[in-house]
Amino acid sequence: MKKFILVISLVGLVSNFTRAQELETVEAKYRGKPIIQMTLNDKKTWVLLDTGSEYTVLDSEAKKKYGFFVSHSNDGSINVSGLGSANNGLKEVTRAELKFGNVKLKGQSYAYDLSTVAKSIQLRTGKRITAIIGTHMMRSYGFVIDMRDSTATMYVKTKKKKKQSDFYSEEMVIAKNAKK
Image (tube, rainbow, N blue to C red; front, top):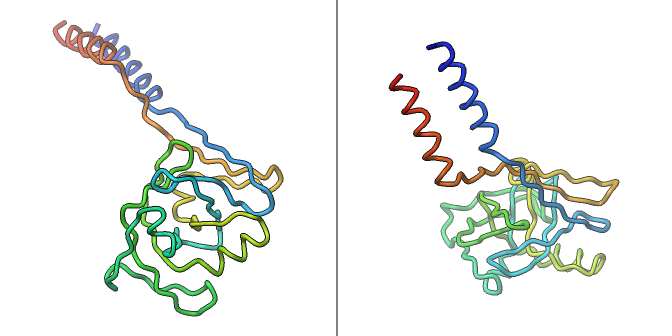
């Protein structure tokens, strides 16, 4: 009888864990460069998915329009090469909620004046970017850039919410089996 209860408990646990996570898929089509639409503080914007950039960078010139804050101290800044010079100081960003579909992208963002890059991209594509999403964030959210199909897809594991009745019924079964 003890073996039977142990097997039933293990089956219940495995079943619970496999049902506890679902895979959410968010996909966007693009043309030419992987520039897709996201929201920044609930306002639509265009972002460039850049596999050559490690960091996610927001255009510091757009901070008023989108309502995010840029650190003025050097404590939250880092220096990187690129963007037209050998040493660029990126400032830490706060109060910036970036979403792809309904998924909030959590992770550190930095700010830099992307005006020159944004204007250049806008001349070629007609889309004015506000952000460059770097590999650190793309990797943590499982982004896939499919150059053949011109799609950007993100796969996110989400926890399935249990109904309260499911929770109580499982607890009662476990308690009832423990008494035997």
